[in-house]
Length: 137
Image 1 (cartoon, rainbow, N blue to C red):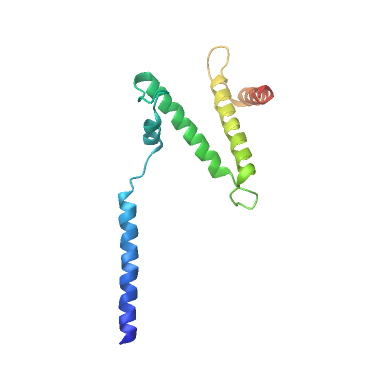
Image 2: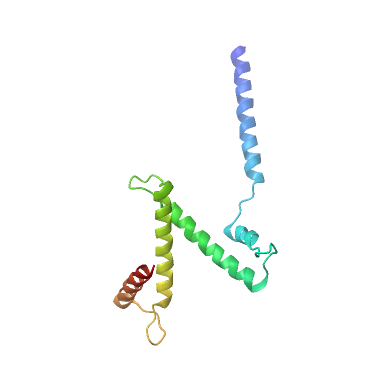
């Protein structure tokens, strides 16, 4: 009899924990980067941005969010353990600079007729562009 009572109480406790976690998870709505950026779109005087300023802010915010989250996810040591502290900050700073460089150089990789470069010409241009960017910073 005591075993039956302890089993019933244990089952009730486990069920209550399970249902409370499910209720908490269901009430929290997942937020997307677009939603977060729209909330942050506020001018210096505290008023919400509108029109082109809001669109521009959201576009930049989403790009920064994607870059930052991508770099943070890659911040791993050789042992595949997450970096922390100064090592993580340094890694993320370099990663973001490299991704900005690559995307900026990629947009400039066009020939004199305005067509996108390809193959060896693109590789050579990208290598020079990235080196020039790193030298300037």
